[in-house]
Amino acid sequence: MHRLFVICWRSYCLLSFRPQIVPAESKISVIVKSLHSNILLAIDGQEGFDLEPNSVIQIDKAPETIKLIRSEKRSYYEILRTKLKWGESMKSF
Image 1 (spheres, rainbow, N blue to C red):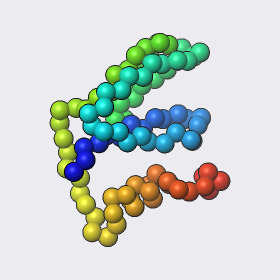
Image 2: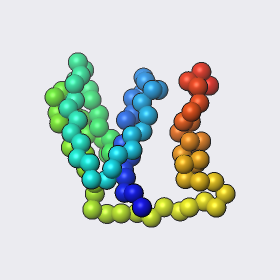
Image 3: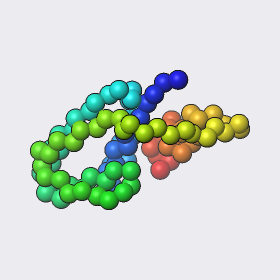
């Protein structure tokens, strides 16, 4: 079994950002580059944090794990493709 995690970049004005799936051992650094001073970081849909330009965000795996429920009717990837609209034309949005 491959251990992975998903990073979902969210931008209210751009629909082209897609979730990124990376190996669980990855350690990712993101430097905030923006001309705007009102930058909000929300983690897992929880409380937001205001960030300043040039802030550094470190992303890595949490020590906790979860188990996912498997559907007998559809594969995990089929469910992802449907929910995230992967493979669909941007014109259909």
